Image (cartoon, rainbow over all chains, first blue to last red; front, top):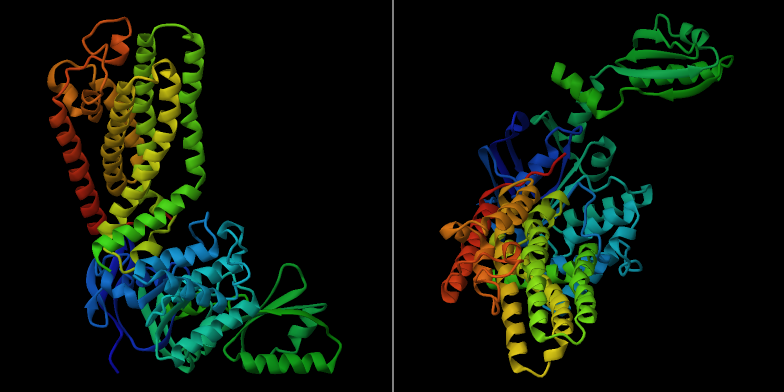
Length: 308
Length: 262
């Protein structure tokens, strides 16, 4: 399959700070998830492929054409920026119609497209309210609407799910998946694995400006599973509960919290631990108040992968 | 979309946006100062000769030439590029099928028209209130059009200069303040050709009525010590200044990448 977006040895730095470091990547049609903690280089990469930044080294093309200072290319690209920024003194409808003017559509076409885009994101009723009066979720949705209003072939979405409520997230995830079925190319960034997981099985892991791993979800999961997990258990009697795990081969390390109510285990086999914990609770005598994973986040996975 | 249509669309969008912002209300209010001044002067001058009205009209022009159009152009000119960076809205513009120079030129044109309208709204009542005793004289209207034209040219030239500053510098407004209220004010009192290194020199050379230009009168030092340039050359110079600086602003905007401050 031909790459829609291709980056070759792409590097970008801001003064002494490295934004992206020797990234070579080919993105095909369908949904690709760009995953990484804050500062990983996701936004830098997206800005490079949307012509907002100029590469220091290497190059980036969309459909084989260079991006920097090539405005004709943007007729087929929709971009949803990460930042919560707008022209605040206009209504949602005026915002979308104003930006649609830049595509050369007729006045009636502009109105139709704006109405359609706002309908897609459920903002029809609020279209005549000033954007400065919108809630965070509504602002996120109108930002998404401006990215799709011109029906682009390529959609670049920088953290589109942040700030949305669970229902809004579900709806947006469905919309993005619909784009895929229409044969479009979608690049979505997030620092939350389950969000990306809900969208696509094709993931690129970025960390400190470099591609750490890329592949499908099972491969990424495999990397994550190999990572020793920390699980914190709060209980009325943590020592009694911990005693039941002594000798368990799944446990590598166990420590007790200073509050006297928690113990933290480090395990390579999370499922086995949870199985035994459930058994211990069912056996009775000890009450479990809370279970949490202090390092069950991408940063921990990245740290693990980097240190590997 | 071709460049001309792109400029037109950008112009339309920002002319619309410009009328919506709070900034315009502040500047319109500022424009009421000369109107209020004209009313006061009119009351004080009640029954006096028309020449005093002409003198005060000149003072009024100092307000417009050396303050109002400078401050308007400074804020609107630098914001052509800088407000997109500070507001992080540049992403919405440069990811559209628009040539980058069209963004600069379209915004520039929109803001120039907005400023011209603000100036016209302020100058018209203040001028005619001040000269209410001469409303029957046709020359009054020609002089008015002359003043309006000079202010229009001033807006074109100053805004081009500040647009260029905004495209090149991060803190353009500070440099603009030094230029607009430092350099431009001081340099005009220098003798010889030094004063020709200011925009205001060419604007003053075009003023239709300069009773104190010859150096007489107690207020002369504060108002004019002008060694005027021929009107045709003055217009040409202002056009060249505006054209060259706008072209440079477009070139910088196209070549430079703008980073948002984190």
